[in-house]
Image (cartoon, rainbow, N blue to C red; front, side, top):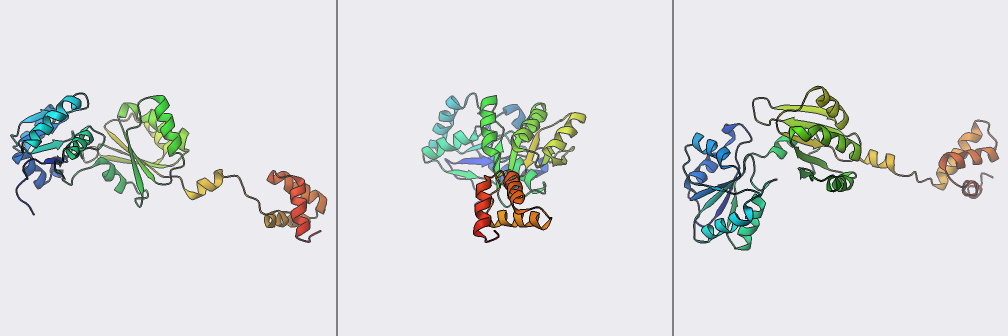
Length: 288
């Protein structure tokens, strides 16, 4: 294991979701040895640094200044300084502007070293009880109604577990939109992960909506929603009626005492098929 950080390298340092004990020894060491630390909210990050006795200078890097600040950070990296990038909580680059800094570093052949650590999406997923074999991280839904509807329409038939982030004041509306677009699915709402009031509410999209109608949502939420099952897909697909199925249905009615002509008419009506099609299937089966 390399005990010294490399010069001219961008380190991606995860920070605790809430519980400071989740900070790794390696992350603390990298922060202490870095020439500077790029952070979304420097006031928030300063509290973390003070707790771990880290004194590296802070650089403000967020969504609104990334276009100007990114090149400045890159210039320092190219001069051989080591920069640590942190998010307000969790893994940098996930639902925050860190991804743009990583792209910029790679474009300039600057080494990027990720450190493992806390992540709200995976933390919620592994405790949800939903399928973890294959899953898709969605993050925050688009802000505009049009783009949100378009994305949800694409996700309606998605077969894998989906993970969303949501703020408390938008949670109820998001649950309603998810239920309307996806149908009622198994779902888990994880709130305040790793913090004192951590809670997992298990149910369906509809039952979660009812729960939060009675209990106002508080804290940051991660929603884990089940994918579309094969059974649900089959229920929505038009029935494909084979000739064998038509003949079997006619035979069943005839065994109940219905004459052949009426049985053919009834099966055609039930299956939404032309009477001639059912008659032909019966004829070919030599039932007639």
